[in-house]
Image (cartoon, rainbow, N blue to C red; front, side, top):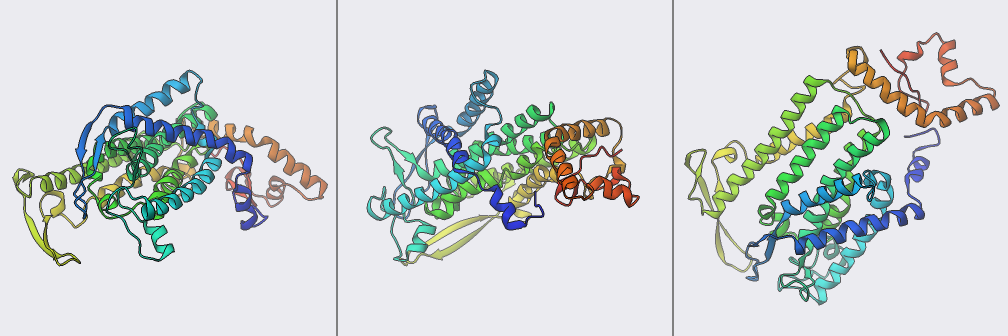
Length: 421
């Protein structure tokens, strides 16, 4: 919360201490090690990736769905048995994000050196510009651990999928569990946001081998751009709305909850179906049915920098006949569904006059819970006001004839807890 001390001081207060960071280190390293172990030991079919420019064909183990469900199971059982704090991602968020930021930069430095001097394949190189090579990467398919596992651990599969996306999915459940721990219930806003995200991540792992045929994998090297983004950007930014809902359990009502949930799940399904159409089209060389009709296509010809002429097929049927890059539209639908609940209170989506009955009771319970956790802070404010000879916020409003119950929730940097009926 931005206070009167200024925005610089406010953000400096949000920087975790070294003690907070060190407390988060075991959780991050344990999570990473567990995912690396699952990549190796969980059964799955071996799948060939796209042919690289050097002729190299990367192999992957398709076990993403199994690993995701097993991760959720271990988290649920461990939390129930008291072995793992259910809300560990929330409890150590600042420290984990700080450690991930530093450690991912170190990893990118190692990947830069590996691509320069110990590349896994011939698909590597450098431009001579240190900044560009660090940002873009020096190797297309870096792997390690071949002496343990014949195909080795693929770095981009780990950073993009098994850490970044896996963390995204499990953190939404962790935030929901933390809200229940703090308030005694899971709000409908948290339910919609978490459920749509978990289904989206599950869809991703179901389609994971299709992702290994995208631009992110075929053309983008393992550098800061990809690895830092998936190790830091995804866990922190992609989950911030759910983290916000932990202490803001807004109630939307059954009708809005149902509509928003259906809208989000519809977006996830359309996104999956559009990607599935493209995969069927490419695997069949354009000889397939889309929506019961032969697929329409454009044959695009191009010449590589080596002077080799090649062709690429572009799909014009199904969802891809609606618009170019159509799959982004349903992704925006899903993203709206899991972020809109954070805007519910105090925005156009709902006002205090529209709340009644159970919604009002739930809101009162929520704010009373938050009030009890901040009571010490408010008593300190009152004591400070008395020492300085000045009135408190409530006293000023009373002198002005203002109805305190209709006041904004935040005034002069201090939360004013009220049950608005």
